[in-house]
Image 1 (cartoon, rainbow, N blue to C red):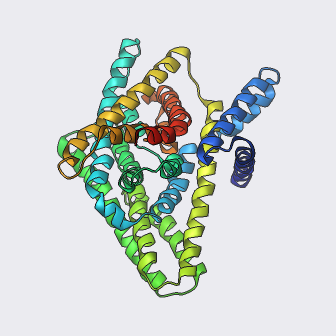
Image 2 (cartoon, rainbow, N blue to C red; image 1 turned 135 degrees about the vertical axis):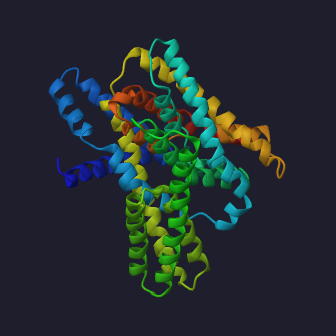
Image 3 (cartoon, rainbow, N blue to C red; image 1 turned 90 degrees about the vertical axis):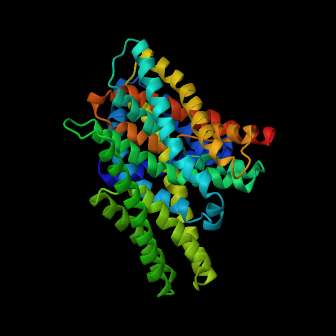
Length: 409
């Protein structure tokens, strides 16, 4: 199947599933798409009991989709930029301490808690694994993706402060988690230098370099857009910033996700302050809003279809359901510890911690990172665990977080 035919099939499925959700389920788009995609996958598996050839053909087509490359090297850059372009810098600035701690310290704490827990849980089950591989799972399952429920939280009447915390954390912790994941991955390679100094240097180079690159990209893009008054050229400049910037980050071994977040925030806030006409700014915002909607639809359809190619057994499946609760406990611990520092400046209540915990959804980036793990690093275990955690997160937490926030706020 050629790339064009693959994208055509995914777009057709996304449009069809979106229509079904809009007409019949009437759920938030991400959640509805996930449910319809899962039902579609289950239908194919059921049909496979009577027509094995049909199931084999579909599975073969889905297995050839390089989910990791498609998301991490294609969709992610656009999605992060599109999400960041609508973020108000002043709101982020007012919550900078919370966002910095939740997107850095929380990711590291969650990685350690989940990594150790997964390692000992599997050991007790008689499955021997390398502890570094368990930390890989901890790193990939730690980033939150609350995009799916952000609209629900807004309608639930939560405070602007909490809304900013969730949005800011979700933008930055994706990039931080990818850096932590890649760092652990490099530590696990034969002959790798594992001293603390080299690890810290690697983290600083990738994260710090990514942020610096994002600043340069944002500044250069804004300067170019200020000099033209044609919205078509300005939109093209933003696309160039994303595609060119992410390529540069990849070549220099810097954090592309962090670069895109910073560039997106700078671009969006520059549009609000610049001399660009309101209609031009509106075109740019609507373009990226449309890109975001299309890519999110594709993402959740892909997540649902991945059910067709997951290889597992009853033991791993049972462990995966236990990992759901471990991930939730780790999430609570990872936001509670930083909140002790934040409380010196503002009041972080138990209700806030509960919403941050239950609203911390896992998404496509976790699945993409799990699929990038090599088979010798217990890939099947982590892919199964990740899939179960992500499905629970989106379907159960995503459907109930609005009601929870209305009940306790």
